[in-house]
Image (tube, rainbow, N blue to C red):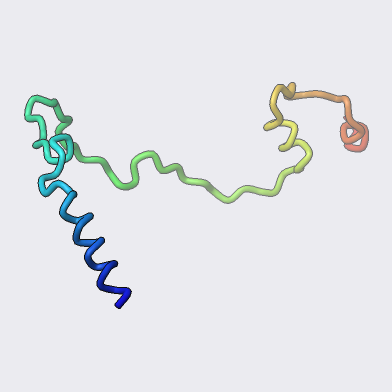
Length: 84
């Protein structure tokens, strides 16, 4: 018995919904809009080869990539240990 009033309510609400979609959703594509023609791009474009290298001192590598770091700073004890 409780399903009949719910079905009637659902059908009543469904009758209020417009059948046609809004114009901004159903608008056709604008033919005046310019498009870029598709061009060929190689799959390997921009790929760099990374060769195997010997391991380097990680402290020196960290200094090189640190923001605002001078390339040759001798303010640490590491330079003294290496005899610089």
